[in-house]
Amino acid sequence: MAGPEFRLEQVLKFRKEVEKMHQLELAAAKQMHESAHHTLNSEKAALEALEREFAQRQMKGIEAKDLQLFGDFSRRKSQQIVEMRHTLADLEKAVHEKRDALLAAAKEKKALEVFKEKKMRDLRMEQLNKERAFMDEVAIQSRGGQR
Image (cartoon, rainbow, N blue to C red; front, side):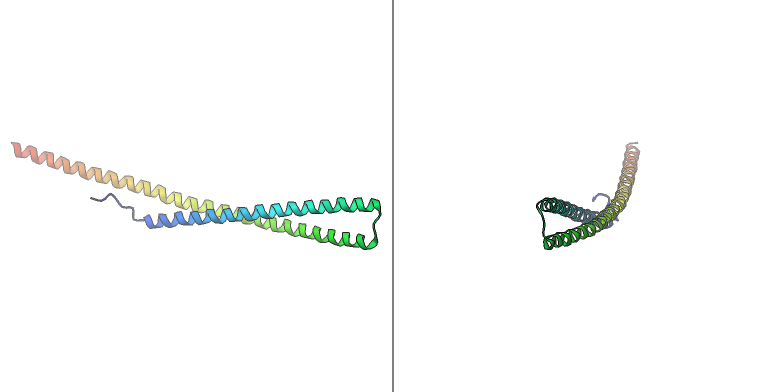
């Protein structure tokens, strides 16, 4: 005789796959966030190095064309940093959204797992009760046959 069967097993498998998909999406979003954060730090360091070099060149004397180039490059780097900060904020928001989606998927899966455990326990109890009733019936009939 086969064991009790959980009729929503396919739904549970689907929810597990959805949770796994959300885990992968969260990992990818975290990776993108970390990469953008690293890039932002690199750009900040490059701007600071540029400012130090500019200060050193100013002490030695700087030509107008070099002053113009440093100014243009510094403004462009500053604008890139501002854009990267906005991108980083968007990526951070995406990470939070992916984390929330993962938590929701995990809750749905867990709820179905708890339901499955309860249902399987109930089915086992029902099976045990049927077996006891059968054994009681066998015992009663065997006593009746001895008399």
